[in-house]
Length: 184
Image (tube, rainbow, N blue to C red; front, side, top):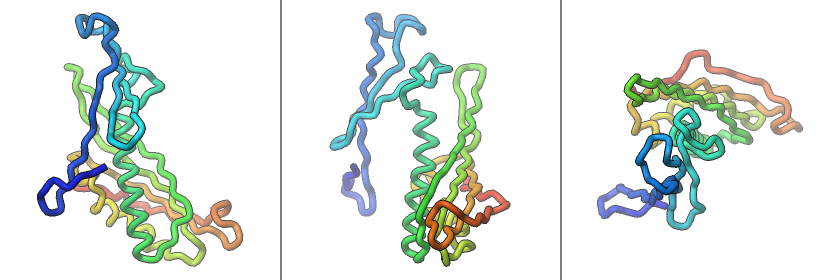
């Protein structure tokens, strides 16, 4: 939950991170400690995290890389849905298969090279599919998370039109051939 910070139009977001990986000897050896942690955010269930399994983490827990890609995808979704509601485009289904590419350096560090969002949006019959496709660019510009990162966030959106009497089952599809990219 956000709080106003006392500055006009500024909101602070707080999360408490607690490391749960001390297996008895702390970080005395690289292989001797656990990577599990949890976030506590007031009024919300704890979020359990770990490192990616390639970094000795728990495959059943969320890792920072998962959460980074998910944050970009979900921020785009929320910006896009708001734009559609404001412009009278009735979205009845939305799904994204986002992919982020992480490049590792020999020293153990690394950086995401890019994230590609692949939203498949189904709009109600009679909707403006061209406008629905165009709104992905505007959503990119409005997304707080995308505006905060320095890597390219690419888009390969697809718009489907629900057939009358068959809301999301059968759909005609329009795909934007060129990719949209956020500011680098």
